[in-house]
Length: 210
Image (tube, rainbow, N blue to C red; front, side, top):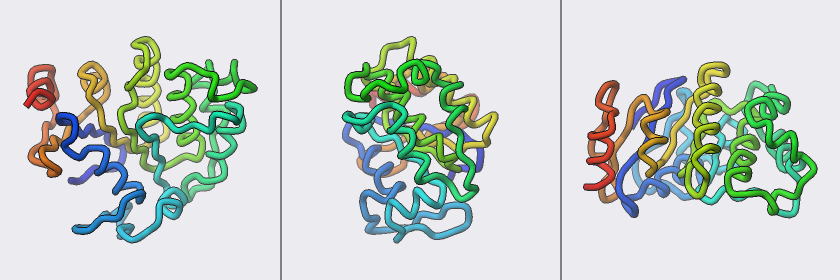
């Protein structure tokens, strides 16, 4: 599996085939027992998750995992402590992409809706200007209107900041909205890829229903 700078690549397949496990290996929350992970020409296979974050990885896990007893603003401040190697931070840009967060910046994160929490989790990763964002099921439990906002924001990250994005997704509409290529997983292995015009409703649906 390889992803070029500035690409938006989906990883698709039925439930239980290993997509989330792959994402957790990429960010360093699970040890890789075989193979290697190279990031911007550097072997990061043995780096801990915090070191990968400092190297420019951003991770939005399935279920979001915001800090519920902290405000929106405080959650975003945590993101500013990490960030990519450039040192640039983007607090105002996060509020531009997700104006709802600015409206609720004093609110405790645990009292927000699932869609608002997802925006916050993405914003917390984005604020540190990662070179690579890894998202696990960004549309899960999120109402369609907010999913659309998230999709537009993700495309803007790539277009305006050059952010590379890898995401796991089961929602057909989300995949078709943002994926430029897709890798298909079956039984813990990447089995094939969909490139360019291959990413269409029929082909994606076939892979999700295998």
